[in-house]
Image (cartoon, rainbow, N blue to C red):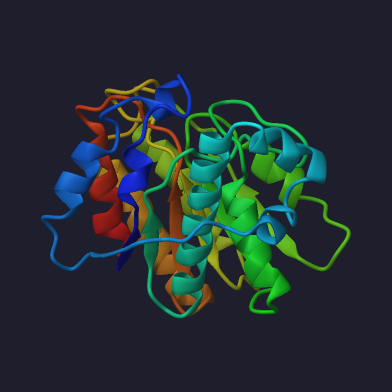
Length: 257
């Protein structure tokens, strides 16, 4: 399994929001490096033409006004593209990137996001005629409105199924919702996760354990193998308790790989 990561993401000065906080990524990297079956790869920035498949020229110009923000946001989008391409070629991938992206819409953004990494990566595969359909599991605490705005109800023939699980009665019911949805899927070319960890028991959502995240990763593995030759990748989104974030990410990767 590939981990897409650059030490440039350690730079916490691009913004003052929780996703940019100093120390957020270090513990994750330290723990993932202990698994010798994980292969780290350095991404390259997305090109403007890649970003413009998901965003307007106005939005791109707005982000470019801050050179550091543009540098890191385009690198995150490039990491998402690398993860998607690795997944398409048969290597499950987790992109440990920031800024996150699932709240970025075509012509605007909020929620610590700037470019929509999911959309940029999937539209790259679609434009290269590698896929015509996708399933997105967004298990972040917050609904990925940017993913929905860009990828739902498209005028072309790219078909995208998006699930933001809403059953928060328990970790078990949350996972059951995911499984039940996946059971109904068909004609999917690739699986992608907007992998937010702020639903964690000790994070903002107070819902999911490390074991739950492992089960979610395993469901991604099981149903991608059933439907699309195991093509699957995940992009880092939320998760803000630095003390528990590493174990939750590692647990997801354990089930996912």
